Image 1 (tube, one colour):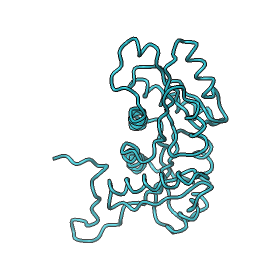
Image 2 (cartoon, one colour):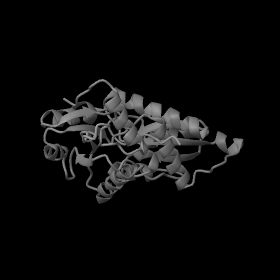
Image 3 (tube, helix red, strand yellow):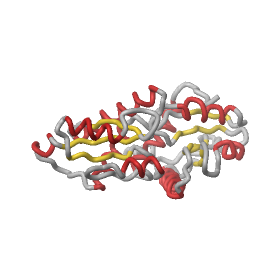
Length: 261
């Protein structure tokens, strides 16, 4: 039977009987939030990752607002190897500047993985959250012609972030068979309200808001409140998110060395 590499334990004993070095640690890098639900959500995701890969040491560090902060987490690792997996859904300032600078100031030997989006597993999780919120499993053609989705994301001034979010929107649209229009809570346009008006002008009045946020927080709450129909929950500890985290970890280790410094 073929075993998924995302779930297979890593052997720590070599063929000669000597103990091998353990795998590099996986450090989940969360943004941080004043909403207490965010920390609970990230910890639940961390627990799910640990269940999938029991032999892998998994740690958590925040960019701001919550403890442990990423520099403190890296300090506990000393000079050990680690892969930093941002729990962010697109490229932007945090991925390009904040996380590499924090890593460079530590003694840990780090690799920086790609953010979680865009990726088919992210689209899968978004789809599942919409279904949980009430998106119909089947849709007749007349209903499909009046339906759409606004993909609500945090927003960034970095054009790469918009590129990634648009890619995620295309992946989700391919799964749903309806238009998916990206919108942003801050720093970019269109806003959710503007996206809803644009879709209404195209005859799309049955519109869901897909929450493209890892965890609950102010932006996710504000975007969901504008939904004219249904709004999905943040992605949280959905099983596809845990698999995606491990996929980014594995991809980083398989790639040529790309240090966070």
